[in-house]
Image 1: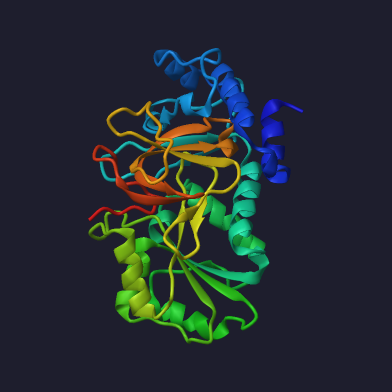
Image 2: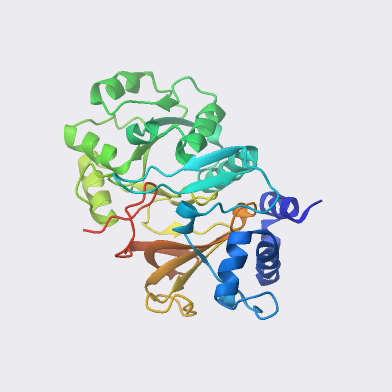
Length: 331
């Protein structure tokens, strides 16, 4: 079995075995196999012989996914995911070798957070993503909708009448997941659309305002939705074009970090300095072993802090674009 396939097998079947030695071995592989990452590490004078701790592993700036082909040498992509981007901005590209792997990993993470997907009907309200057929989120949800094996699971327009028509048809023995881009959830809430209290609906927001509304903090977004719909909590999904894993917040505003993903916090003025103590705010670095075919170690443009084995997203770095698939909305 090749090393990259061994990593995938560990993620799916033996995630409890992941430790620091695993991440260091992944670093050595990535250094040797991903030319863009190797060049970046050499620029920082970080090489396998002098990286002996995960705190020393370099993280590739996520902006390089816009200008470079980030892919293990010798592999050929079968699918390219593109970020939605904003008007006049360049788009990130993630070259994916194995879409089945992405599907399996995403389903694993969803079910770890929510249980069997066949317990759900998914009402996806993602109009802006449907305008981008190369969206990784859309590809993932296509698979989730099929996996529910329910005829009412699907994409719905941002239209309270259309959603109201489907509500009486929802089965009482299923959980309903309203998975919406953030601005669409707010639009629905402000339109007065509601569901009967007998329907078991979980609201899961993702994707932000997409330039359609003023940016708000996630806390304020959730407060507005909870007040409008009389629900105790709002869930969130955190993902991005450049990452094949997803993080979920199941109602407390904090993202659970799954096995096979590590989050660390870097000092904004000195990105190579990783905070070891909990509770410090700074730039977020992510290790995502699911990215073994591209780059596992990514310096993202969100600001946050770690709280135990969870992470809180606080904002965006000043120089970053507004992302398509994240939780943050600075006000």
